[in-house]
Length: 267
Image (cartoon, rainbow, N blue to C red):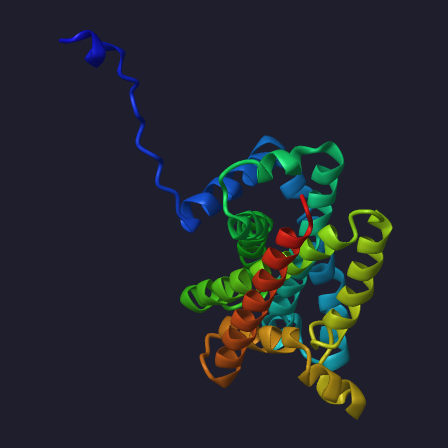
């Protein structure tokens, strides 16, 4: 072997990256925080169980039906959507913390795509929600809730797509308000509760005033709630198709805004 061949530097082939692998890396990095602190997952179950245990019987008394005579089948999907919204809409709060500590800038210095950081973080918020949803369904089962596994699985997929969009919107909001953290919480809380109430998640909107029904028609969350109720009832129809469309549109708009905000943030 000649001296030239012995001193020739070794060229390492570039690692092929893709959106899927980048997203998986971000998701796993974020999910490790849950693995290292599983008690947060256990305590986060308290709120949905309180809604089921206290609000469910009140709703059953209002409708004059028993808890297992359709009330749980109607109410439980709304609770699952609620915990999805609470979780994914707070994706930006974790980002604000990373901006303060400087870890987000280190993440941007990696070759990860901007879109993968958005989707990976949103999927991390959905991971415990899927576990919570399955546990809630199993807890409600002895009280008369009827389980349709394939329909529930499709419902969780729809929530996943919708949640990625909401997470991306939250991400963009955090970047836009990073100079004043309180603005993020003010906007998040101001938007979250009207969206939840106007989706018919807790109470049926059919008995509400006409203006609320009109406002609900422009709320994408309404179609998600209706789709989940139809699927959790073991049915597949127009409500499911409209829910899929609402989830895809929300996801597309959220990712477009989120990526654009990151690119213009100057980070």
